[in-house]
Structures are given as C-alpha cells and as structure tokens.
Image 1 (spheres, rainbow, N blue to C red):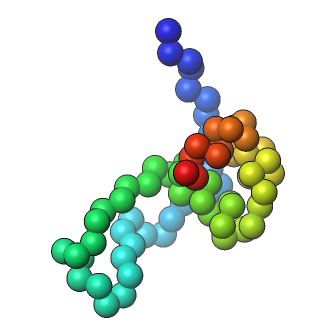
Image 2 (image 1 turned 180 degrees about the vertical axis):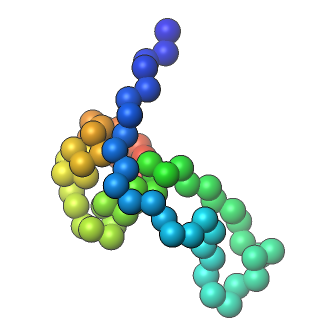
Image 3 (image 1 turned 60 degrees about the horizontal axis):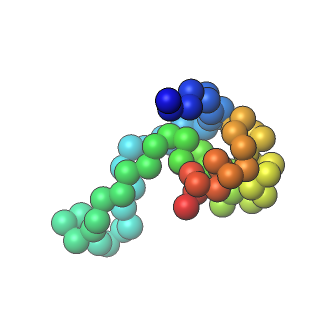
Length: 71
C-alpha cells in the first residue's frame, strides 16, 4: 500500500512558466520540467540560502524528502 501524500507548504509561485538563457535558440535546449514544490525547494536552498533542515521545516516535509526534491 502506498504512503499517503503529505501536503507541502509552498509560499512562492514563479511569475513565469518558462525560462531559458538569453541568446540561445529554444530548439537547441533540452526541456526540464519542475513541479511547484521542486521549484520552492530550489528557491529556499539556493535563493534564500537556507540549510536543508530549515527549508524542510518551512515546507512541512522531512529533511530526506527535501533532499530528494532538490536533487
């Protein structure tokens, strides 16, 4: 039996739905899709510089779950 899905706390939504580097034609890029909770995990750890334990608490998930979202 699968484990129940735990609600994750996301406090920020991206203002755009697509991002690419300037000057690189889109046909030359590989598309990578991020879920909103993965985006929030990257934002907390990279943009805000929070440690995994702090960021996991903010998202209401365990530290191992947070680790899996950013890697």
